[in-house]
Amino acid sequence: MKTPSPKQNLLIVILLAGLFPLYANNYKVSSTADLVTAVGNATAGDSIIVASGTYSCPSIIKLEKCGSAEKMIHLIGSIGNRPVLDFSSMAVESGNQGFKLSGNYWYIKGIIIKGAGDNGFLIQGGNSNVVDFCDFLENRDTGC
Image 1 (cartoon, helix red, strand yellow):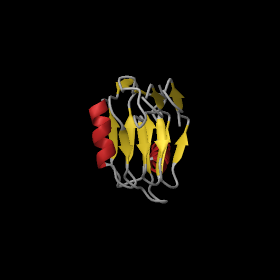
Image 2: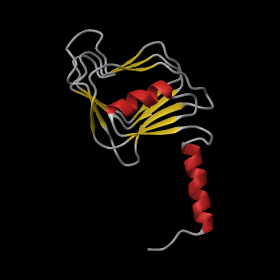
Image 3: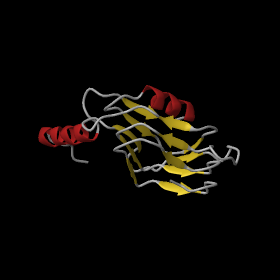
Image 4: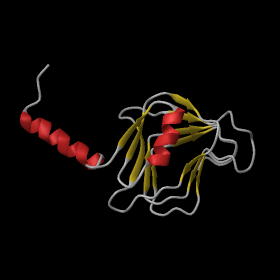
């Protein structure tokens, strides 16, 4: 296997810096507890990267923090993976959403949201948010 040249390495660093801004935190999530903690700690410019797998989520995950136009908060599946956030253990009940987004400037990509007791993903009052390449399966009301 050929080793990348210094120029190629620099290009990779520049590309990654565009995806994950410098001086921001990158939370690598591999459990439901990690996800809830990362969402609670995230600030403008941070990225929450969810590893492959299925995560059992028994309660609503609230996305209340705000990014900015220059520094969105990213919640994304790890490269090449589509993690499943499974809310099937929730009671079927109005108000039991999987995600409730009320913050601004979130970028959510590559997540599968399944089995919430109501909406899989409720956007409520937030502005300038992007939901990209996400699937909503078997939620008890609308997906998003």
